Length: 99
Image 1 (cartoon, rainbow, N blue to C red):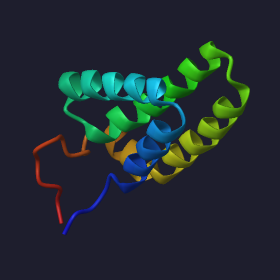
Image 2 (cartoon, helix red, strand yellow):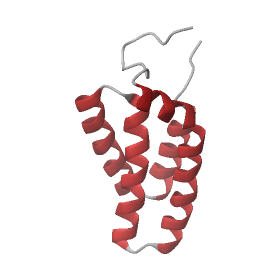
Image 3 (tube, rainbow, N blue to C red):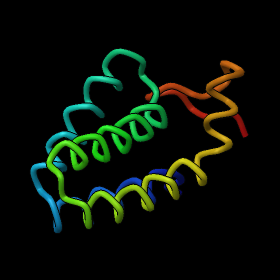
């Protein structure tokens, strides 16, 4: 059974619908971070921050506020992942997480 990633996938779906160029930023950052670190959770966290920075740069206040809120939700729901990243116990892409 699939676990994880549903919140980030939903975030990306909303991003594609409302601001597809920002979705390209998300995808580029996600791919780069994943290639360098092999951590999906870190990729999603940093990609969501990159989207907010990009939207700030564009000057789109409404989208920035919306995605700032959604990014905060992503970070809050990933508290466990952040703790595991800091402890060095977060599974990497392709690894089976411990039971």
